[in-house]
Amino acid sequence: MLWSKRGLVVQPDQSKWWQQSHAQCPVMDPVPAAEGLHFVYFSSRDQAGRSHISRLLFDVKALQPVTEAELVLTLGKTGCFDDSGVMPACVLHFKGCCYLFYIGWMQRVSVPYQNAIGLAQILADGSLKRLYEGPLFPPLKNEPYFTGTVHVQQIKDQLIAYYLSCTGWTEGENGRMEPEYNIKIASSQDAVNWQRDAQVAIELNAATEGGLASATVLSRQNHYLMWYCYRGKSQYRENIHESYRIGLASSADGLNWQRQDQLQSLTLGEQGQWDSQMLAYPNVTQTSEGVIMLYNGNHFGKHGFGAAVLQGEI
Image (cartoon, rainbow, N blue to C red; front, side, top):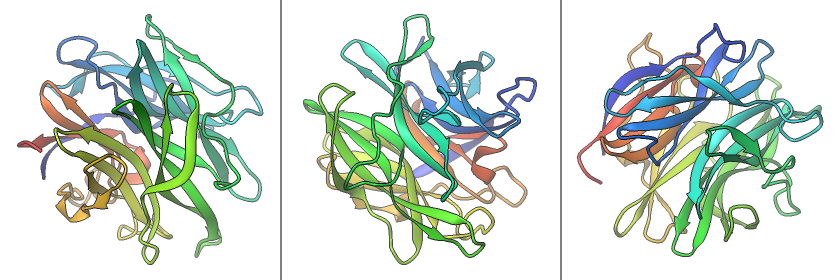
C-alpha cells in the first residue's frame, strides 16, 4: 500500500487569534461541497493553548485550500466537558442530517486533562450548532476514564463508532501522568444514543505501546480498512523512536480487526522536514481524485497538516 506524499498543505494562520499554533486533527467531509472541493475541519490553539475548530474549502486535485479558514466551533460553557478546547473527529451524513463529532477538553488536577466526545450539527448555511452541552461518550462504570477521537461508519442497518478509550494513567519517567488508550467499538441507530460494551477493535501491544488514536475507516466491496496512529509508552513527545506512527488494520465485517501495520508505507520525512519525527492523526477519504490521507507531523501538528495520495487500488 504505497502513498505519495504531497507535503505540508495547511499551516496555522497566526493573524487569526484562534490560530496561534497548530493545524491539528484534520477531518475531511467525505461528501464534496462542489466538484473536486471538500470542506476540511481542523483545530488550532490560541495564545493560552486552548483548541478551537476551523473549516476551509479544500481542492482535492490541487491539494490546497481555496478559502481562508473560518472559526466554526469554540469553547463550551464554563464547567462543561469542552470548556478548555474542542477538536474535530468525524463528519457523518446520516438520514438527511450532517453531523460533526468532536473532542472536548477539560482540565483536571490529579491528571492533566480529560476528554469526551460531543456532537454538533452542520446546518445548511455551514454554521455549527451544538446539539447537547454534555458529551455523547461520558465515563461509564466499565469505562471510568476518558474517550477521545472517533470515526463513525454505517455498516448495514446500524452505525459503528471506533473511538479512543482511555484504559488508565501511569506516571512517566519525567514524573508526568500519561494516559494509555486503545480503540473500542460502539453501536447506534440514531447517532445520538450509543451502546457501549467495552468491545475492543484494536488493542495495544502491552509491552511496547501506550496509545492508539484517530481511527478512520474505508469500506470496500468485501472488506474494511482502518488507519490509525500508535505511540510508545513514554517520552513520545521527545523521543523519535516512541512518537506516533500510522498503522493499518483490516476486517471482513467491520467488527473483528486484524492489525497489518507492516503494510503501511507512509514513513517519516527526512531530517529537518515537518514530518521527520512524528506521523499522527490520519484521516483517509475516498475522493474523485482517489484516496487521500490528511495527517499531522512533528509536535502533534504544530506546523500544520500534510497530504498523501494512495497509489493504485485497494
